[in-house]
Image 1 (cartoon, helix red, strand yellow):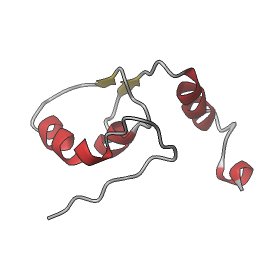
Image 2: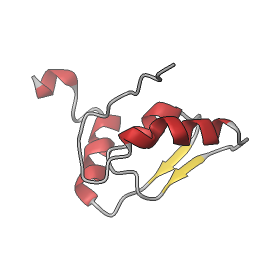
Image 3: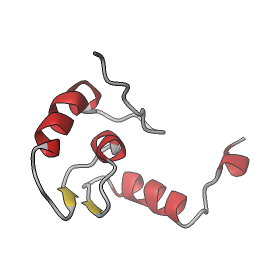
Image 4: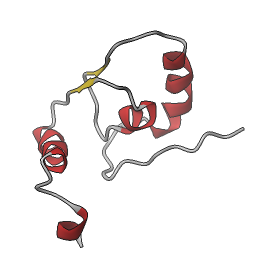
Length: 81
């Protein structure tokens, strides 16, 4: 059975979309309180794991600013249209 992968709103080099199913199956076997991803990139893994708590980081400040703007609703669907 093929897993449907939630696709992130941005694309970037090194995207882990093809690895989501494998990472998810490994993560499901663990009991963790927080998902920590030091190289989040597009965020595809975190979007698909949907952890209760997460710490996402990336060296690309533009990616971090984009997701912070989404979180604070400075970017929203109406603005993007």
